[in-house]
Image 1 (cartoon, rainbow, N blue to C red):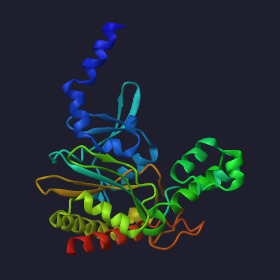
Image 2: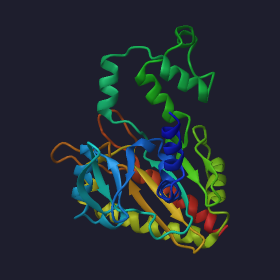
Image 3: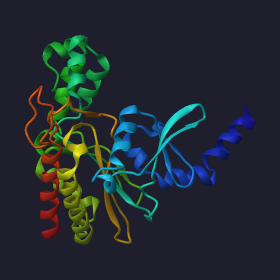
Image 4: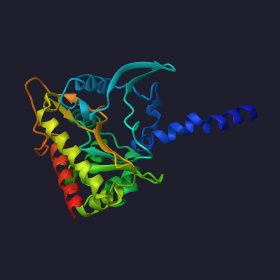
Length: 298
C-alpha cells in the first residue's frame, strides 16, 4: 500500500490539483464538487444534465447569452458524459465569489406533486430540519424522528430569505480563502445586507459595478423569449470580483429550468400559487438590485 499512498500524496499536491482547487473555489460553494472537472483550453466540465444542456443551447441565441457561461457541447471523459462550458473565473486574480439562489422557491411543482404521491416519512430530512431549527418539527414528527419530503421542501424555503426577498445566499468564498455556507437561517433584510456588505468589504465601486451588471441582466431578462417561456427554479447568480476591481455576475445552474406548456408565459414577479408556475425570479432580482443600490449609496 505504501507506493499507492505516496502516489495519492503526489496527486493531492501536484501543481494541477492545487491549481484546480485554487482556480475553481466556487465549486466548494455549490455543494456538488463531484459534478465538476477541469476541461481543456481553460474550460470546465459539469456532469451531464439534459435540462441544462437544452437550456444552454437555447440561451446561446437569446438576449441572455452575455449573462450565462458559453456552451461548447457534450464531451465524454473517463466513461462519463459532461456539459462543457466557459471558465467564468479565467480573467480574475484571486477572486471573491458568492452564489445566490434566485426565486421564491427552489423546487419544481412536479417535484412537489411527485413527493405527495408517496409521502413516506424520511429520517434524513428530519435530521436536516432539526440541524437548522430543533423546534421546527411538530411533536408527532419528533416522535417519528422523520418528516415527509413535501413538508421539508416547503419548510426549507420559509426559514431563509427565499421567502422574504426572493433570493438566498448559498455560499461565499473570499479572496483570503475563508469560505462560509452557513446562511440557511439568514432571512431578515438587515442580516442579508450585512452579509453582502462584508462580501465586498464595503467597496462602493464594486457595489456600483454589480448594480450596473444586474440592471443590464434585468433588461435582458425582460426581453428574453427563453425566460418568458421557462420556469427557472434552483438557478443561481454567481457574483465574482477581485482586487483589480473587475466585477461580473452570471446566471448559472439550469438543471431545474423547464419549458412551460404551449402559449403559457410567466411574469416572474407574481406570488406563487400552486398551478401558476410562477418562480419569483424577477421579484428576487428587483429586491437584490434595490438592496445593493442602497449599500452603494450609503
